[in-house]
Length: 447
Image: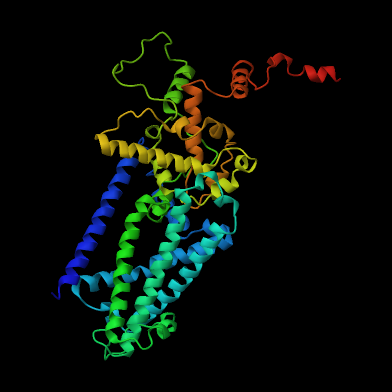
């Protein structure tokens, strides 16, 4: 009977990790639906960028209020979860505060955990207020209605509960040590330092040892089960960026932001046209007639590359990109955040299609038109403000440009003004409808 709690803990731990691993495999499978792209160059520069932006949060603090609060919650989340290691050891082996063997260092750690837990609790409350009461523009977008807004609030509530459980567990433990109840009490001294939870002791005043043990054990179990639940909830939440921000920044673009990639097929054609030794009457190279010609641009998620799909899963829905977008500021429908959310929603829909059928079966839908509107795509000024603003290295512009390429090169569906300009450039070498010989006529007329 004494091993039942350890067995139950082991079952919960294995089940939680197994379900998490299953979901991670689904994410990797979905990302691999995209086209391969080589982003393995300049590993030193990429690691430095990841350390600076993903780990160091350098872009977050550009907005001091939300940035500093985020850093507090981020560090608290990471550091406090060091205690999860102790909880796992205690749960599996039936020990209590096994890391107390570290001596004075253990007291310092527990004290630091508690102070961070209080700061996280305060930070989360402020975040909830900003998101739900302050009417900040970037939290009012149409794409944040329904589930996205609820999801953000669920996470905030969950973090509040986890911190409260952590402090409650420590307070009950502290009271049991004061009462010299085994195994909480140690003759070697106080097992930990409790600068925050000590103020909760009046709540437990007059309670019997058995009641305190029930409270401590209940808080302990709910805390660790809550962490396992949170770990698996990440798959369904925008907070997946907690895990994906690091690879996303590592594989982000290193080239100058204004430099666009050329389509290799177009590049090869231009090189052939410019080659003076090329025979224009030569028969084309033999190709596999059964192979489907490569599509220009992208109309669905399978046409995007794997980094773009990783971007979609990494999006934090913070809205910094949209709040910086000049098109959005002038009332256009374009929201870079929505571009990423729509891409992720379509990718998840494709993944569910594969889960159901074994392979993707045409569902009559695509990313273009069914999720992202053409009006949104053509509203973009390609200024890269969204790319610069993103705190985790996401590039919404690359998706917009690939979808524009599809519209222009596959469907000849550019807006009339753009089509006229491109025709003039082709015929006259400039976007204006004037022959090159007539361009200076205006000067003659005014001389």
